[in-house]
Image 1 (cartoon, rainbow, N blue to C red):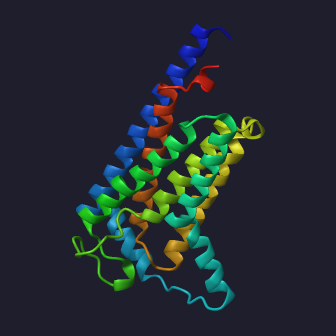
Image 2 (image 1 turned 135 degrees about the vertical axis):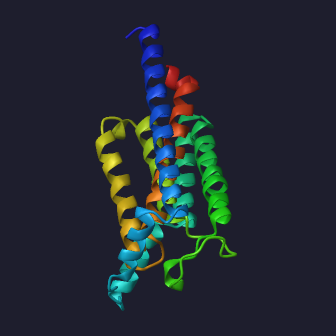
Image 3 (image 1 turned 120 degrees about the vertical axis):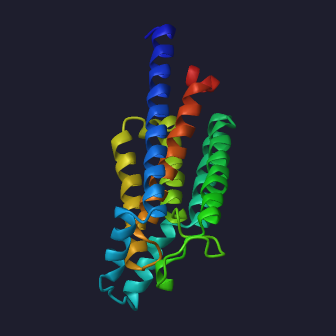
Length: 225
């Protein structure tokens, strides 16, 4: 394939990624509007809350906590940074580390600040109000973190490790499964409203795809070769 064809292909990938990122951001804004105006998703939150929740004890409780930790920033950030450092050392490139650090900065900056701005109370408090005076539950940091951080780790494996180069579908499925489990556990444990989780997925997904688009827009020397 010629350099010109590769450049066109990269441009098409970048443009597609930007469109997807904007679409996910728009979806997040729609969910936000639903929460602010107490529309359908807000009402669905309370229908789900009204369902009888099973009390988990013993090993069941420990299993749920272990699955919930898959969306915990301390765990996901550690796994991502270790992977990025190993890949950076192997290929003598700062790009994996830069992408990983930027992903974590965006996660804590964009998602973290948004949670503070809305300050929505958690369902366990049995009251649903905005500006509750603390770091709120909307959007869910767990769901956005699961998708953004594990998604970036999967992207680094796909982009740099030959073994994973032809396993894009498996990586996408794995990230999707982890994100789904984190969301499901949050609902079961009554730590987030349903709209919190959906909003977190859309916002985390938008940031992830935007980072991928940026990586494609300014390819490293290895990617050019």
